[in-house]
Amino acid sequence: MKTAQYNKKKIMAKKSTTREIAFGFAMIILTGTILLTLPISVKSGSGNFFEALFTATSATCVTGLVVVDTYQNWTVFGQLVILGMIQVGGLGFMTIGAYISVLLKKRIGLQEREQLQESVNTLEIAGVVRLVKKIVQGALCIELLGAILLAFRFIPEFGIGNGIYFAVFHAISAFCNGGFDLMGIQEEYSSLVAFEGDAVVNLVVVSLILIGGIGFIVWDDVARNKWHFKRYLLHSKIVITATAVLTIVGTILFLVTENDASLAGRNPLEKFLGALFCSVTPRTAGFNTVDTAALSNSGKLLTMLMMFIGGSPGSTAGGVKTTSMVVLLFYAAAMVFSREDINLFGRRLTDEVVKKANAVVMINAALASIACVIIMTLQPLLNFEDILFEVLSAIGTVGMTTGITRDLDIISRMIVIVLMYCGRLGSLSFALIFAQKNNLGSVRRPQEKIIVG
Image: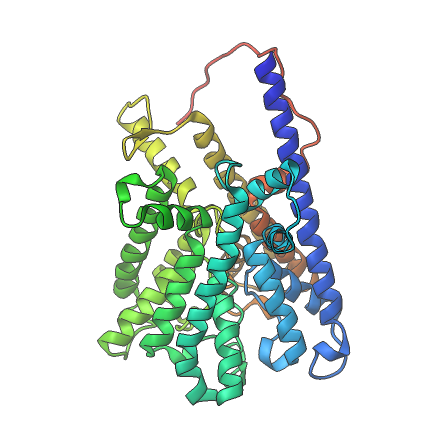
């Protein structure tokens, strides 16, 4: 009975924290929307409310889908507002708020620590304040290093002022998996296509995306245990292994599928860089060096699978997360080979982890399916695969598009906005917001078998 009461209190506390996080992100989006509608934010005339709302949501939810070109439409002030929302959305407003409190030497109580634990998605409350300091300081150092490296390429291309500004903007956007770019200075909606063969830009952006997407817990684990892989937490082992496999296998598959399609006519180095970028950016950065609309059908399908998986928990990335897919994959294997336990790296996974992974994947799939049906009903002239691509990009907070974002009507854009918001919070957390009561009780119903499969 005591265990049930404890679990009930724990679940209710989690719901309360989740609602506070959801409300906080909503307030950031609203504030950003208001700022982007000001004349000082727009290069010509006053800002359109729905364009501002879509952009603010995309930036705060670190997605990268846009209905207007970032450089062509927004002034430097507007771009800085977007950059600020990307940074806050990527690291989390609670993380940044707690770090400021630490700098001001304010005391952080138990309730605030519990909220931080939920915000950064760490496994335990002990050391969460120390972790927050590492997250913010580490993020700033990595972004600074990325900006310095990008500046060597952007300064010769755009001049000293623009070169430094563009380097900082793209470093933050890449690390936070934001997907926003300023390359509209060359051509609208072109992303990083102009740097398709530039090894420095490609490798720096890919590295920033991967580092931002592996998760803060993994950072801390690697920092403490250095290169001793056996000492890592099971979570870190799964994340690092899954990220490496997806990156390597994805690169090989894109080399095969796009060799005579979007990568045709390039030299071997450019093909490798293009395939590597195509493998990394769907999880979940949103930049592209290859025209997304020019991808082969198999390339688009592979991209959609990558977008659905996304990055890792407690990171700047979205999607159902690598750990969820690994858990379900090994759960299926255990069922096929009649194994009672799900074992990874010498450890056994709990039933609770399997249930949560299943819930996350099913909720994401259900939301994406419902959104697809609604948008296809509202706009039947749009291509099905383009709609599915757009929906998965939104809920996975990816930001890649085949070009239909600007063709969506108001209702369809509002659906995409909801998907981006849901994707940033996490589908399970989003569902928890609407869960009004806890059904955990002392009485359990009788069991009965049904036929499945």
